[in-house]
Structures are given as C-alpha cells and as structure tokens.
Image 1 (tube, rainbow, N blue to C red):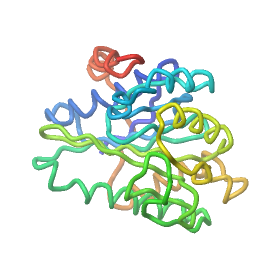
Image 2: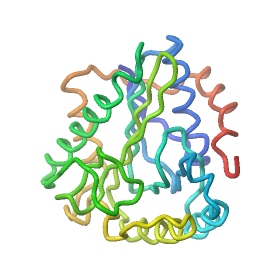
Image 3: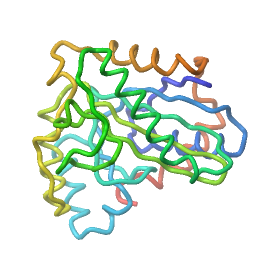
Image 4: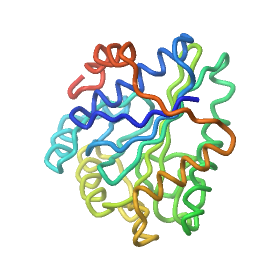
Amino acid sequence: MYLLRDSFPESSALDVAVSHALLTRVARGEVEPTVRLYRPAPTLAFGRLDALRPGFAEAGDAARDAGFAPIVRLAGGHAAAYHEQSLIYEEIVAQRDVTAGLHDRFRDAADLLAGALAGLGVETQVGEIPGEYCPGSYTVSAAGRLKLVGSAQRAVRGGALLSAFILVGGGDRLRAALFDVYRALEIAWRPATAGALEDVAPGVTMAAVEEAVLAARGEDAELSPASVDPATLALARTLEVRHRWPV
C-alpha cells in the first residue's frame, strides 16, 4: 500500500477533496490502495445530514468564529472538529462488494487505532459513548468516557474510504467549538465526552502517536512512502468545490 503524508493546510476543502480523488482513482484501478496519515488545519467537518438542519448556516458561522474552517465532508455522520493537534488516518482500498465489508472495515480500523493508543499507556475502549458528539459504534475512547477517535466511511463502486480523526491535544479548544456548533444544529450531546489524548496521557506527542499508528498498520501491510501524484491533485481541485462552505 502507498503511504501518503501530504496535507494542504491552506484549504481544508482541498484536503478532503484529495481523499475524494484518491477514492475515485483507487476504485477505477488507477492508483494503488493507499493509507493517508496527515496533520490537518483547524476544520469543522459537517455531514450531509447536518446540511438539512435549520441551524446549518449558523453552525458554519460558529465554526468560523472559533477559528475552524467549515466544510462538508465526504463520509457520513454529524459534525466533527479537529485541528493542528489532531491526526487524520485514512485507508482507501479497492473493493468489489463495498457493502459487504462495511462493518469489517470499521471494526478493523477501530481495533488498530485502539491498539496503537493502548501501546501509549491509554486504557482504550471501542464502542459508542452515551451522549458523544458525532456518535458511532466504533468510537475509540479513553475508558468509555472521553472520545479520542471517530471514524466514518464512504463507498463507491469499486472502492471504499475509511476516515478517522485522532485527537492528540487541544481538548478545551475542541469542546468550545463543538459546543456552539451543536447548539446551532440543535443536536443534544454531552460536552464532557469531548477531549484529547493528552487529557489522559499527559506529555504524549504527535510524533509518538504517528509512530504508534504506522507501526500498528505496518504489522500486516507493507507501506511504501509516496506523494500525491499530479493527476490525483488535478482531480482533487475539480472536486474541491463540493466540499467548500457553503455547498
């Protein structure tokens, strides 16, 4: 599998569009299956269902006021926030029957990331936390109380993308942004579920988390470092408009 570390902090919409382009090209057989691990810019990623809520425009304004760029993401789920002290981990794979492997991809990624964080001394647990933001059955938490990893998927004919955010630091900033955004969307949640890895593992570094994740993934797949190729980037620039705010 290719390993891509490129990011495009000048445009959160372009960063998401690069993953969209990779999914399209992997599904067509034009690019090898890919793992992408990168550090994003401050982003408030909204799901398509959020766009149907009356407070959607207000939520985008709240995100901007908190210093987060609002975008509409490729995968499903409700609003999720991440910033420079976060990591985005993605797997883009070719799949003949993408629906059949849906839960397997969620489970495998959750187990991989939970194991990587456990290796850093965190008591991890997989499963939805009552009242969590952007709820999911494959959330990775600290002892079932603090959300550390959330994941979502997008499948197209021939391929699937699993995307997960790992919150390393800046939990207070995350909670503040999500509080105002979820209030605008009129979605109930418990702010105490939002935090970061450093809240339970003081002193943890981004580099240590990156190393742990790549070591865990490298146990069953050979990762070949690569860069986003010109054709993928060109396609991403045409897809970027789909993820900009407003759509």
